Length: 333
Image 1 (spheres, rainbow, N blue to C red):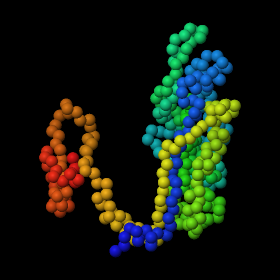
Image 2: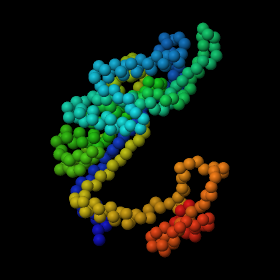
Image 3: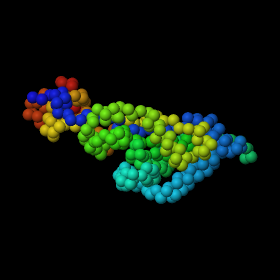
């Protein structure tokens, strides 16, 4: 009988280990405290009063710049509906750009989402020279999804909003990067929607996947952040530059079996070998309504033991009201 190890060693025609989805959060270090924000406002105010009204003017100018950027390049502007899958809306525009061999922003999406932003209010002072205080608060504001088809990375996007501290989010896909690097090097492969089905030079493909580094990611960020509209002037971009942290990263280990039967055998053997892996001692039932001491009705503890499951021929018996299970590792409460 084949084992998991033998199936993986004898019936796998391709193995690809790669970085998959990457989500970065970009932030401006010089805008992370109220003192730094006041210095930023002072620069805009020319040494006069650092009023929060400056934030509104800066944000409005940024939004107008985004709209002008999209209009000048005839980029479709889509306002996402609640619950709409954004990736599905952007996909036709990405596919069209790929067919045409065109790199650039292919769609601008707008969605109202939650964010942390600096807000200011008057805190004393004379009318001629008022004092203002600043704090970060939760706001629901428009976010701008700038969908990009990149020559090196393929489908990607950068999300921004017009509120200080002007955060950005960058989405990339390591598989898409590897596909384009392989194509540039003349390596033939059969792609999947998010991976590889076959490759005639598996070792060279593995080397490409292993070579992906932060420098490739930073090159993408620097290239597009310099080309896209910004809330900062050209003179400010050097001073108020972005740093990036990893918000989410997914790793992929793909195994392609030489025939479907081997894949089914691996799946069935894995299920058998790992049947008890991660089985919890207890399971809490979550009701679809709020239950308090005033909720009417009777609530009972349901206990199922391994012994009762085996003696019932694999069928779960009727719950036992109250009581305690004698086999701790198999109880369900």
